[in-house]
Length: 122
Image 1 (cartoon, helix red, strand yellow):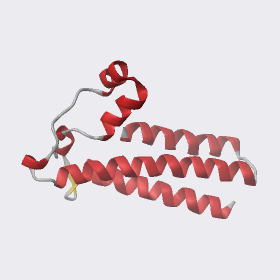
Image 2 (cartoon, one colour):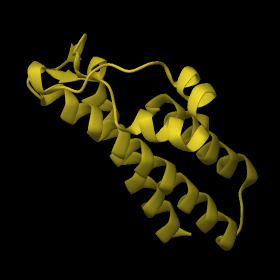
Image 3 (cartoon, one colour):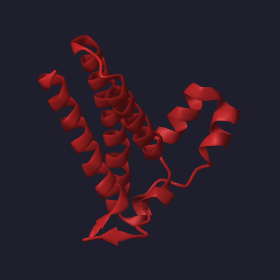
C-alpha cells in the first residue's frame, strides 16, 4: 500500500512539474499530492504502530492483496487489507536505528508539507 502511495505522489508531482499549470491547476495538483501523501502517512503510521506492538499482541497474518481483491471485491478486500496483518510487525532492516516504515512515514509527512507549501506559493 505504501509503495502505491509513493508512486501516486511521484506521478502527481511529476505531472505537475511537466504540465506547469496555472494557479487553479497547481492547487488541484497540490491537493491531490497532499491526499496521496496523507494516505501514505496513514498506512506508514499503522505499520510503525504494528512494529512497536509486542509480538503476542500483533494481529494474525492475512492473505495477499491480489487474493483479497479477487475473493472479496474491492471494498471488502481493501477493508481487510487496512485491518492489517502481523507480518508487517517484523523489523528486517534499520538505518540510524529507524526502520523502513519509520523512514517512509517521515517521507510522506515531508511530501504532505511540500504539497501545502507549493499550494500556498501558487
